[in-house]
Length: 211
Image 1 (cartoon, helix red, strand yellow):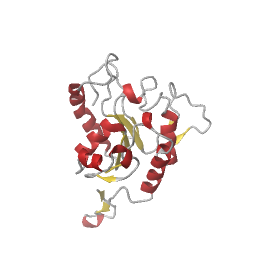
Image 2: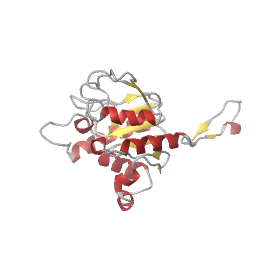
Image 3: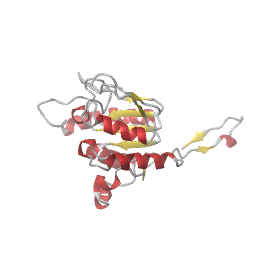
Image 4: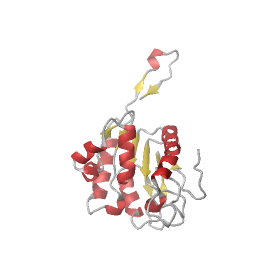
């Protein structure tokens, strides 16, 4: 399902991903030149470095990758996309509320098609949407706990998904990359898939995993 706009940055990565990293829109989180979300920004290498240290992607160890033109990422079992994939009008800072509402079904269909085990929303807008749409929590609870800063890189139980919020990389301080990579490494040591084998209830010997 593609958005009805002239210029957009499509989702990128493994269509059967375990991890789905969700940004806001290309105007703030990049990708217009390469077509890959989160690339082409001054913070892109640090952002992907944290994901790599956490085991979600592999990066070009030589450092020769050009974020503007050539993705330097081996995406592994990860998918990258935006809440609002269309490139916004350059005359405004962000898309309108109507534009977000128009593209929400496109994003929702993509999220459910990928069906990743872990959602990793990036920045306030994407995190608020994921929290309110795909977990039993409210944004007020997150605010009361200290906001996105407090939950950055930590695991929140969703409804069928686990959620790991990420502070907007434009605002990262000295410890945000380390906190994210440490949280991801810890997550990957757990049973983040939370699957049960129901194969014993059906004919045959093949496993049948469900969440």
